Length: 130
Image (cartoon, rainbow, N blue to C red; front, side, top):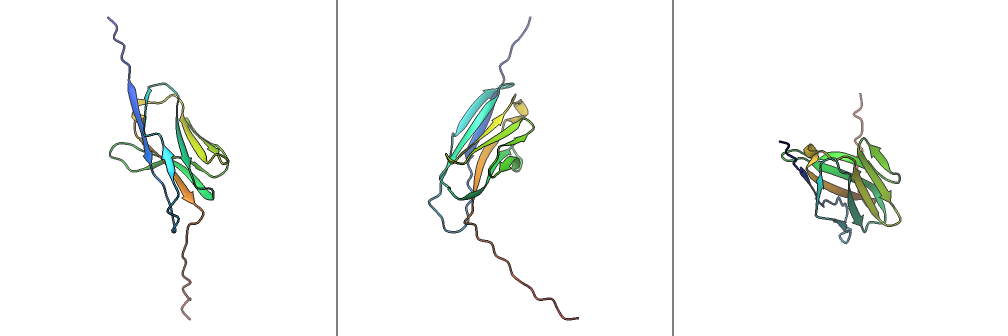
């Protein structure tokens, strides 16, 4: 007797935006839930309103674990093993595709967009005389 099981993978991804400064009207949108079967290819989509961004990052968070970077970039598409990030600069969107999804990749997936309006601070410390 043969048993056939369909294994469904819950690939969730939530809003995760990274902003600096006082620009409060920036937004990042993602589809809230995706379910795929093991071995299928799947694609997450993320749209944002940040026209002057300097970095796009896709993270995954396995249950009970910290965030891991799947892919990151600015202007060009990134291939990282089975993870492929496409950047659509003109439409302010990005996609993360995973080929042949595995059960152990069931996780939360986050899209983060960093604004170029980021403020950095540096302090010059004078060298003590000898």
